[in-house]
Image (cartoon, rainbow, N blue to C red; front, side, top):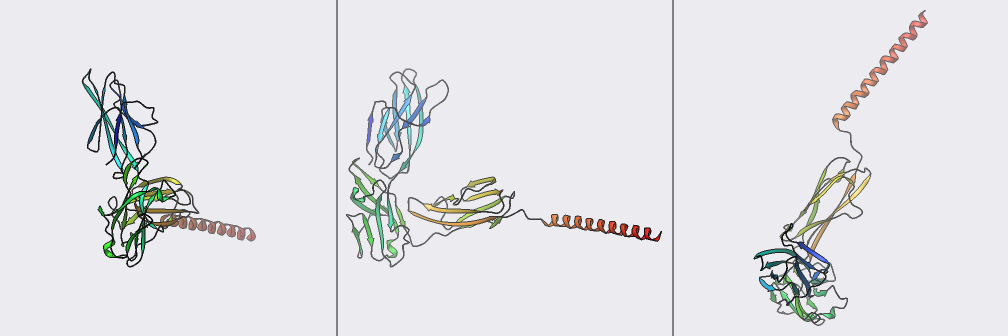
Length: 333
């Protein structure tokens, strides 16, 4: 469980999360310093223009705590938490409240070693409990491994190495597939933290990008990232533009779709779609190179130009014929 400490002191904090009600009434705000990290205590302050003897109450994670400040150490089980602060003015009998969503960074995760190793049946695999805060992983202690929420039971050809930091599989079996996490005790904050997990699966995601390979200035083109994983359930999608951001008169990104109206002919643009599940430690990507060519001549434009050329040619023939007749006439005189 996360540890909670409440004090009544006021601190000068740098980050204002959310302002309360505007106008002449009571204003409430929640503020804190820096980013909120699993395993590290963070002090949140609820402040207002309410005075004197106003009563402050915090509500979060089904808990209620009194006091103007709240010190909380996340345990890694949540990636976001909603904080709610209510201020009561006993003189007016008025309650005023505000809330904010706090994003939590978890720097402890389960990873394959070496990185980018693809799990395969009947092959060996190492899962490591990695702490991004320290280069030396020995800072983790009392480490316990979990699979699908249950403590791992070691079987034959499967063991722990490096003071439990590594979970080794000598030969992967179909039954080894699952969601792995590690739990460790951090003596500096005297709290237990559960890591981000890794989904061990033998089914690899397929990612591709649909859309034209050739585009033209002034013409809107659409590109869609197609994935075998279910968007916003198994994975999320983000775009990268390696080699430079698309140049044009219009550009938009909405989830797995990109719309672009280029403006520079004779250039190339790379679109990279990345499907990922950070909590599960999985990702896959695809890249598409698109060429921007000069504006082509349409069929109707070609017909118009053909007609214009024929008209010019016809006019030229009449001019030549007139010149020839005039020459013959002059010679006959």
